[in-house]
Image (tube, rainbow, N blue to C red; front, top):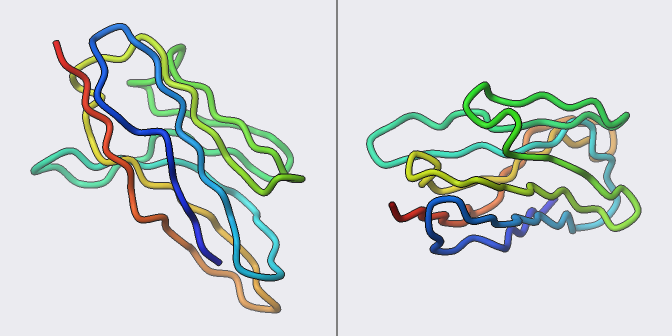
Length: 118
């Protein structure tokens, strides 16, 4: 399973960005999927997740500002980010808990940089 992220960039405080992650690579089933981020010198942290049934969860730091969604037909997951703050600056990674055949594993994208200037 390949995860390809897009949509990162450089923005100002208060701006919005939309990250997208496309799943490719044959026959598979995506269970939960989500976004993580890693700022310089910090550990990777969970940002938001969404299950196959559409249940969502968010880190407290992004609640009310970020919205995760998935399009199962297009095999994509998106993260709409608004009211961005400098502390949102990080590399954002797409994650998928996917089943290929009888094996379920975690897969990661290559990461996309989000930089928020004050």
